[in-house]
Image (tube, rainbow, N blue to C red; front, side, top):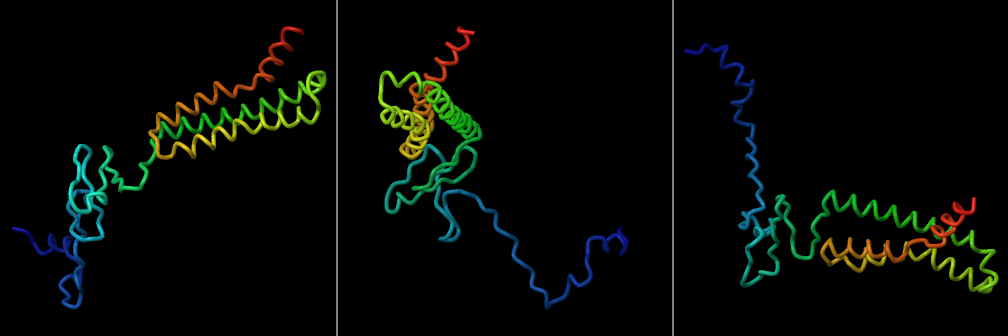
Length: 175
């Protein structure tokens, strides 16, 4: 049999006060398909399709439990964010490579092209990596992630700073 002292640890003075209003225990929030209130979103797990009236308003539940409603984009994974960061850094380095390589060749290019044409081509080439990255990022918003990453890798192959790479290679051989 328990003594009164044992029960004291489980009670707080004033627990039985009738003026206190006990708060309702919070209902467990589940991203399940049937909401208890109209403010909760409707969502179905992957593999299920909503049909009928207002079916376009039904979202779906990702594998990690996140609810994605129609019109919303799913959050990018850590691996994709890391890949995008590395690719953005590579594009910044390509921009720097175009600046350095283009300015090194400025004197030698006077024979082939006028100074105004060379400056226009140089600064277009310097802006190309930034424009490619921003363009791919904006134009592939609605596409799958692999499409965006593929276009970004294609840009790296297309926009390599050849003047920097060739002058650096020739400079190493000449010395």
